[in-house]
Length: 431
Image 1 (cartoon, rainbow, N blue to C red):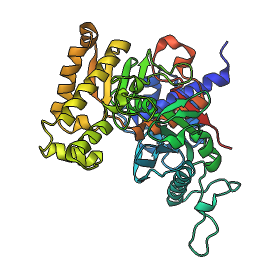
Image 2: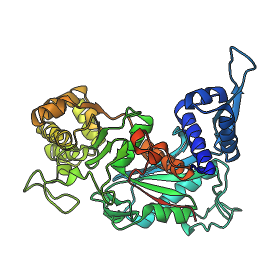
Image 3: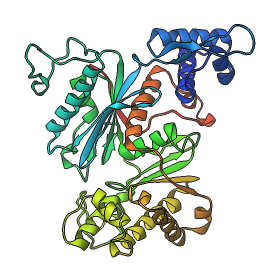
Image 4: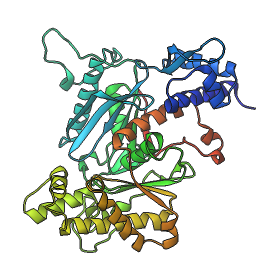
């Protein structure tokens, strides 16, 4: 026998997810779309309004009868923060729980050299954005000394209320989801052994969710990008490092501790260059945006970052260079490895080099076809990813909040497919 309270929560989640997918709507439309009775919808809507997740909007057009009032995601009481930690640059932004990232309320800053500095900068940016939103943190929260304002006449910064429901973090490297701990981050070693979700949760008083960056990309693409409705796909990230996320039957392939998919640390050059993981010749060192920038630096005799390397490529100076040819060759090897090992129905590839010139992606596919099993390659659709790590961080915390609200239908009946279930994440609840 189904617990009535649990059933009510599941219906509330279904209604909330409808608004996240479809935007403003009337109760009558929700009832038809979700196959729920009018009283059930009214009860679910009332609960979501009471919890500040929905709000009344304008009047809906109606061809018959009295027009109903539109409902929509609450603009001021249902928001989340997203954080992307990456080598070079980090990002902090806010969004509504439908995933719409605020254009004005986001910040980027150079990645610091130490873990305490990173936590302090993230905390500072979150507090700043919360202050601009004119909201307050719980009075019991003690601000760190680095956040105490210097302006005269103010004793502490504005803080966060229930307007913000949580914070999602895209974390590079190997994230043990059972322990909530970064086991190893080849490109940001100061994250090794740290529990970023737990540490930020204690400092901010918010529910914080950490996802390995490839899993975050998968979830973001599935919730907001080209993977909507797909239950079988893979996401190959070839940007700073090389990561892989695989979704099978609607669920992420995470392994025992969330460490599955580390394709980037398979050796492809026995005497290759030293990788951040400590090994030599890893696929990550030869098949990524970072690898291309390093090769361009070697070619021109001075260090360049990826934006300048891409500008040189687009200007025509590097069109036939060995830097580009070698990167394409190993990118194709990475794509072929994913196809041969996991046999995905769809493969998305995320990286900036691929978007610099349309011919680059085409050449990668031609080379990958030569290195793949014919039947597996023919059975796989391959696209450039439309999502990004920012969307992935936001999607991670929204998914976590939904899971905390009620189980999804997939959790109760795995055979139905659809979205839901843990996505290789670690969660620290608010203190």
